[in-house]
Length: 180
Image (cartoon, rainbow, N blue to C red; front, side, top):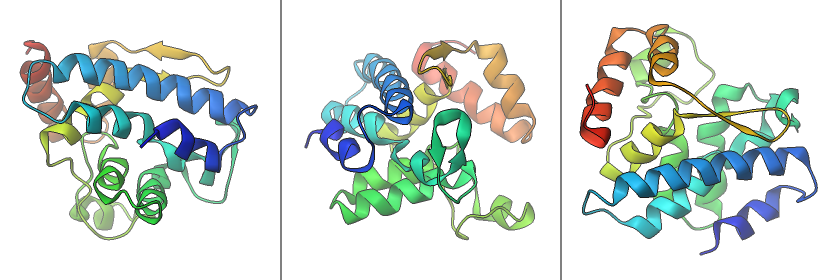
């Protein structure tokens, strides 16, 4: 499977959305593969899934990323899942749905009235956790560049969603980078 060929089915390669998606996804894939070296995991799957994890953004109404769909940005994960399931990649599809933040529980979706299907969207496999972790470090920028985020920035962002989210990230930080 060539993840870029799948992306090209849904994005015009000359579009800013394509540039933003691919630059971000390649940065995430590079970091995820570096982490994966320390573990017995499926590195090919990590590469493919990291490149595809945000494929659903074009369906969102996010002008700063040149995305002009109808859905709120938070929906891009489950929308990506639907795309990759149709493409015949159900395992990759789960990475799309489960990578947002450090995961979103069904309880949080209902409590916060989020426009998401009522199910847990939590990274479960080591591969899913690695990709979700790596994703936190790279902000998409409207000019197509990627900004490296600091651990403190990530923690501050996650703190808005509760201490449990920060705790999960810190556990991943210790596991994947040996930092606490």
